Image 1 (cartoon, rainbow, N blue to C red):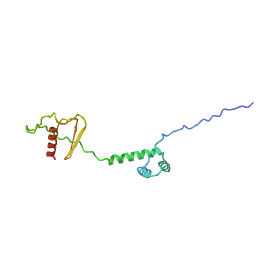
Image 2 (cartoon, helix red, strand yellow; image 1 turned 90 degrees about the vertical axis):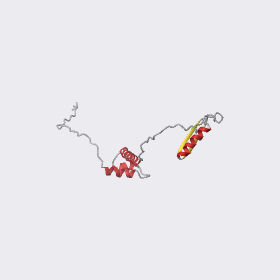
Image 3 (tube, helix red, strand yellow; image 1 turned 120 degrees about the vertical axis):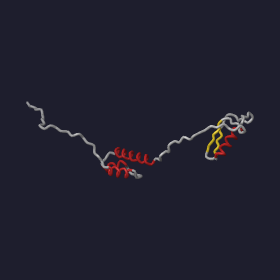
Image 4 (cartoon, helix red, strand yellow; image 1 turned 90 degrees about the horizontal axis):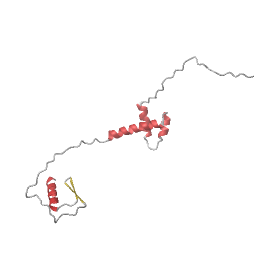
Length: 141
């Protein structure tokens, strides 16, 4: 009869595990790899492998670099400026009564640019009103 003894090993020293730390790469190392990876026709995966890092990490560094460039290069938008507006009644001799004979059908659009101002007229417009608007724009130009 063969006697089989179970193999048991009892460790006499406790196992001490240190927490795994992330590798920290210098800014110069990151910049050098990102610069190389942005050259046309290069393989980002090959550059990452040469640097001993994962390609996804290098893609993340590239994204941060390109986002930073885009934010720095974006032109600052000027703040919106509100202009004062006043409404005045026209003098009695310039007031126009709506003319029923010169009313256009309600359709289409007329767009006029005078002196940097753009006037867009939609629908039916009577001639005296249009003349008054054009005269006012010419006096401002």
